[in-house]
Amino acid sequence: MTKIINSSDGAVVLSGYTRSKDSTFQKNNGYFDYFIIKIDIFGNLINVNNYGGSREDASKVIFETVDGGYFMFGNTLSNDGDVLNNNANRDYWALKLNYDN
Image 1 (tube, one colour):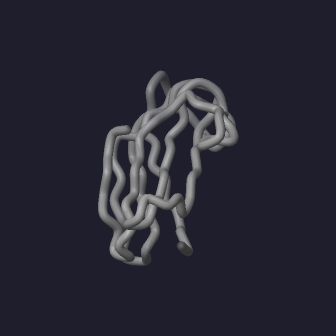
Image 2: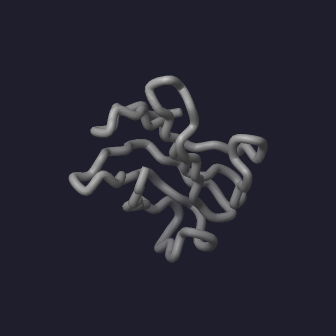
Image 3: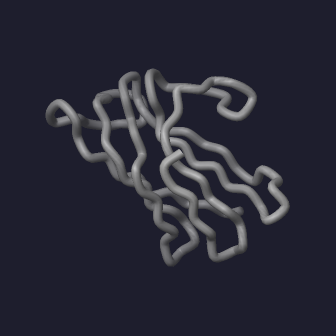
């Protein structure tokens, strides 16, 4: 886990990167994936997602956006899966996520 933020709706958002494929993360796209977990003030799980390709994808920063979504920023070695293009060895990768809950 690389970042924890409080969201405007009172929830807590955790982000980072993971290699897990278990009861929390139903899939893994390859090596490391970006992840985002949103929990309510009681610790109940609201949402879990991970994003990436077959190689290393490491989220470093997350911000809440004015529309209630999230912006994740990190780097990637992948050139497949959720990563549409990689121009060289380790590229910066930004994701804009929309969340309804």
